Image (tube, rainbow, N blue to C red):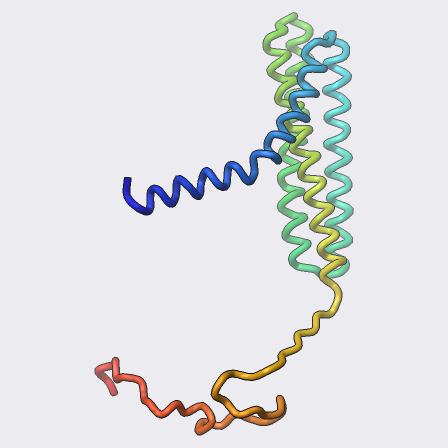
Length: 188
């Protein structure tokens, strides 16, 4: 295997190991919802579907409100972050509404396998919507945290240069190292 291939495979493995607890936690949340719903009656499935659609719709409203607040503060980074999350959660809202509609038809026909498929889609969409809402809250929090002033203090100097005040200008002679660079251009 070429040297770059080994490095890339090690880097990929490291990335998977670094994010595996997050992925496992998300899968555990979705699995707990799925296990609970898969053993439920058609009426409970319909209730879960409606609760999921309602929760995702509330998430859309929350992120929209955060976006308006960021817009009033004219924070470009928060606007971009929140806009991306809002777009994603709106798509999840559409997926969950369509899955709910399909679930109603499937439950009426008695196709339990297809009903479980639609419930799985809704559980995954709900889990992802919760994640997007949490990310949006971090975007909004970054906006408030980033509003403070930062102070950078430089002490010491560059080796080989005389100490001077910050207000003094640097002349060409102060920067002369005694050697001219080689001529690389044919036009010199």
